[in-house]
Length: 418
Image (cartoon, rainbow, N blue to C red; front, side):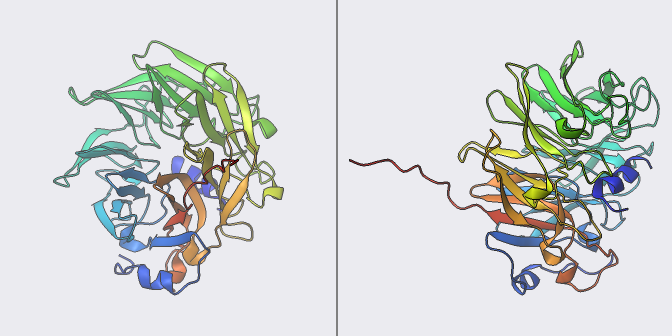
């Protein structure tokens, strides 16, 4: 498999070495200014992280989709300063396996979803108590119509209800679904079934704004007859579902993976991965105006960017700097090609900059997810790389890294003096 999302699509369809601190190995390798490898993932620490990091209480929370004691992935927390990693849970088949995008981190608990495993083998919705460390499966997904199965992202919470998406399930069994889980009654129900008309196969988290849930349907595997994915919104109470935009393919975007981000005002930001397996369609970043309904391509990736393209998640909007920060995977995982970039640009699409080019080895390759911003520093993960820290691995491409990139203080506008 040559591309991360092709590999991830295979996941859809279908104790190596003792832990060691990364600090000494990281210091031995010269790394670009502003960039630092915080932690190398390997063996029991987990491998193949496919999830953005979530910041809470000055710490970073994340997951790796493989590795751990049972080979089914791990849940972890990490100190943003020292890079010290603490494992919170080792996944296994009965309690879920293959955790995917994002976590919902609250004061007392962490909520998330696994794509596979559970008592009915098609994924789980879970809760981990941050005080006691106890792990609980809230719902085990079954591979049947009207249930929803193979969730690829963490839920969002509104009151005592968790809302989320599943890649498969719903009335057609395969199109996917939006679900609600009542934490008081411990009851699961499908809110909306996705079809070719609404867009199928959501791969990211929902974004809650007021009484609406906003999301993306990737239409992965159905790129024919105009099916390139949709941007949609759905009422929390299950009474209305609206398609806000249909992706048109090519330069207008296809396969909107991941989540949506919000500028705090009237703009949504997202990314389209491009046609999976097509290195000529490198993906794009888009904006959607909630007030006017205008869809705008903010940046279309091209070879001239030296960026490689293929973004799998939306950029983060930093209101202090007035800029977007995101990552693009690059076009090839195992062979020649760009190993991914960290980029920045203005919301109007101007001043695109490559802040960092991932080079493989201890510096990681194939960055995924939306970077987390703490103070003046961005934090993120790469799905591969890191093997040079130890010089040995059973995973030729490496198990991935956790990195930081220091932006420095924002520029202060110069005020003319008389």
